Every structure is written in C-alpha cells, then in structure tokens.
Image (cartoon, rainbow, N blue to C red; front, side):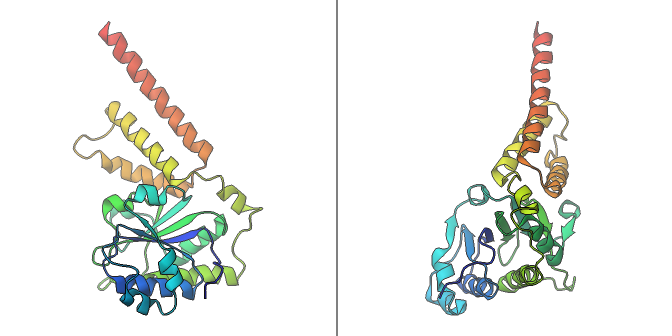
Length: 256
C-alpha cells in the first residue's frame, strides 16, 4: 500500500545503478522513511525485475513509479537544490556537508521545494562531471580506511536524518523560508548561467587554457553554497553580457 510522501518534492536520484537488487533495496529504504520519488539515470539494470521487487519488500509501487532519464540535465532541470553525495574529499569537493547538516539545509527550504539527493554508481560513486551538477556536496563520515557503503544504506541514513527534522518540527512552512525557497534558481537556470560564464571568461582569456575547469569548479561550489535566487542569476547573466559586449566593441575598434 502506498503512503503519502512526507517530502513530496524531494527525489532520490540514482545515477547509472548497476544492480537491480540495489535499486530494490533503495526503494525499501525510501519507503521506510516515507520518501516517494525515485529517479534513475541511465540504469544498467532492470528496476522492475523479480529480484528488484523481492528486495523492495513491498515497495513495488516506488519501483513502478520510478522516472527514467538518459541524462542529468533533463532529470535535474526543475530542482532548486541538488545534493551530490560523495566519499571523495579532494580540493574540488569542499565544503562537504554531513547528512545531518544536509537535512537541515533541506528543512530550511521547506518540504514543498524541489530537492534532489543524488547517488552515484555502486562501484565508483559520482564522477567529476556528474558532481558538477551538484549545488552542494554531502558525505557520510565513516572509517576513512573503509569508506564504501551499500547504496541502500546511504539512502537510509539520509532518510533517517530527514525524518528527524519532521519529528522535531524543524521543517520550514510555506510562509517562511519555504516561500524564499520557491524563488531559488532551478538547476536548469544555474546550468545556463555556468555555461554563459564559461563562454565569457574564456573569451576574455581569463581561464587557464590548459585547465579551464579549475576556476569554474570553485565558482560552482561558491554559487551552489549561495543558494542563488532567480533574480541573482539574471544579474550574473547581465554582467557577463556587459563583458561580452565590451569585448566585441574592443575587437571592432581594433579591426578598424
């Protein structure tokens, strides 16, 4: 029997899951904590197989409603906050929030704001290009000498932290921060801004030609933490357009 989700706008996103058993176990973990939306990106398995259904232990409805996408851009377009989970703690992966801190950020936005929590492939996690779709990164603090967690275990931990917010009434309602959350830029709007920034900064010879993504990685982390509003994204577009126009003007002057 299906239940009304306690987080109707929140989605668990599995990127390139390999094993139907794991997808079934994830559905079970989601139902344990009343999470109702499952997105699968280029799955390498049959999420409706008998094995997946067996491991879901009665969460078949989540498997049947799972949304399938071939790429992250289309899958994440609507979301106002995209959390990428990672066990990697390199220079491009900072700051990294714990599941508790991540849940608090989600709770501040309110239950009606579209949020995605993204998990990578079982044997590799999220790759660098996939992590670039994240607004913030989150990691489960485990034994650094053995950081591997089963996919369903990871989902279970985030589900638990979200349930604690509900139990403690720590979720903003739609009349406070939830209203502000509705004004946040969507993933598609942010991706458009990043694309414009890259083009403009490259045209201005501001980026290192040998590694143009080096600076952009830091800018993504900066703007991701800032939780940008739609108006702020438009401002950045305007600034980039001014730089573009100035560059074209200077170029035309030199050509005369």
